Image 1 (cartoon, rainbow, N blue to C red):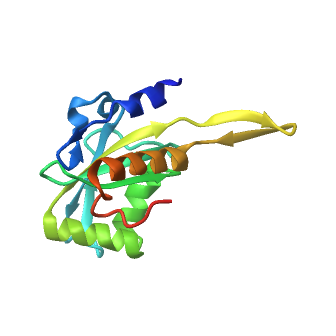
Image 2: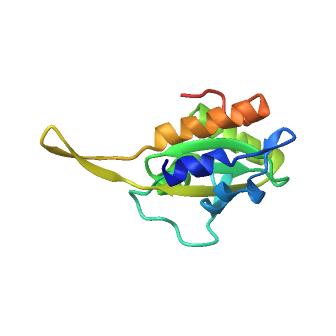
Image 3: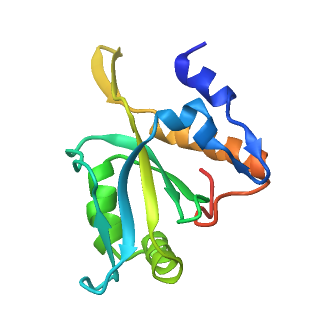
Length: 159
């Protein structure tokens, strides 16, 4: 069995939410940024990066937690940098608007990411690059739903 599958098995339930802070899986996620309310931008939020902003091309799974530490969103993205620097900060759509409204009403969201590797494999004589972010996100959301009887507040659907 692979390392990621082993780690997924150790997720535990503490009441209504995983206790990822006492769990090996949390060690794989790194604090990436904080989304906070700010009147400097039309959409009403800004993003603070306490470390380096990742280059384009990093795929990942991200977890958003509110100031109480509660997971409010689990998502995946083909480009971590674009998701936060452009999409959540500037682009208007239902998901982005809902997250920005949450931040304006409830305060800062801490975002942690797991940078998912890209694999390359020859298929039918062609070299194909792929990343399992959608499958991994689905498995994490399925596990979360089983453990907590629901999805995080800002997740509305599972793929």
